[in-house]
Length: 131
Image (cartoon, rainbow, N blue to C red; front, side, top):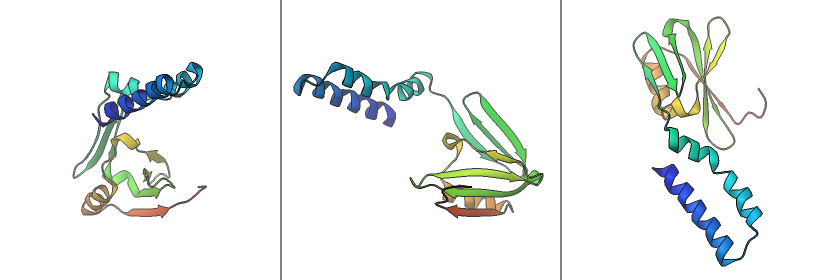
C-alpha cells in the first residue's frame, strides 16, 4: 500500500512538472523510469518472510527460499549500513556466509532478541565501508 502511494505521488509530481512547469518530456520520462521496479513489485506482489523455530531458520523471498538448521549457524552478523538499514548474514560453522534478503528479514532488534533466545550468537557491526 505504501509503495503504491509513493509511486502515485511521484507520478503526480511528474505530471505537475510536465504540465505546470512545462518540463521537457524526455526528462519526465527519464525520471519515471526509476519507478518501474516499484511498479513491477506492485504487479507481482512477491511474498517474503522468515520463520525461526527451535531447530531451524527458514526464509523465503519471491522464488528464493532456504532452510538452515540452527546447529549449523556459528553466529548471525548484523551490519548497519550508512543509510541505517541492517544487513543480516548467517555465518555457518563451515565458514560459508548466507545473506538474508532484506525484504525477508523482520525488524532487526526483534530478530536479534529471538535469535539470542534460541541460543544463537549475534554480532553487530556499524558503518563499515569495506568488509
